[in-house]
Length: 211
Image (cartoon, rainbow, N blue to C red; front, side, top):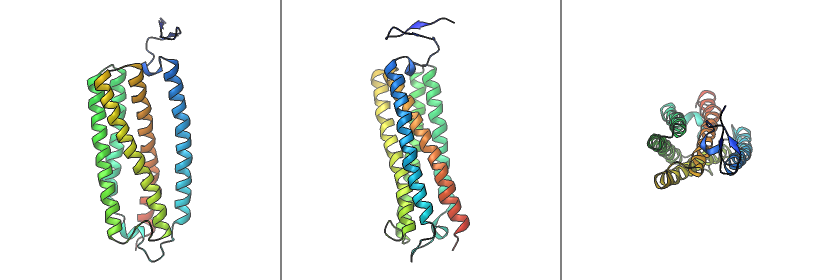
């Protein structure tokens, strides 16, 4: 196998992804995996708190009364699809296609915005029906868990917008490709968290707590 010399004097395989071709890039990606470990701990704590509060509805509505299959399925479809398009963006990046990368990142961004729009509408609907952060212990746990995920999605969208701007300005470099790759890890992580929310919160709520 032939090797090419990188900027730090080390030799890399020619098929090494651009974001891994510098020591800084490798360390930053490793550091982000550590950050994701902390995020997993955060969401694990929120899930544990939510599960403890199941059934504590006080005088408020139950999840079975408010959760709607259609809306939740649309949110899930949008986020799962955005994870797929995010993967296509990284694939285009590996092919050194700046245009393809930006297009698929843009589609991912739009799907993420669609997800957020449906979630905000859902929250407004719940509050209108008498379920807010202060209604009961259960709804407090619900809004903190799902709202924290939504806040993370919002940050992911803002991050993606900044990356697209940098890609337009600078093109594919070791720095911009690293940012794309790290942002894609973050986005896939949020997708996995949503699958747990969809199962533990919505499906369980609709099946076990009707009426």
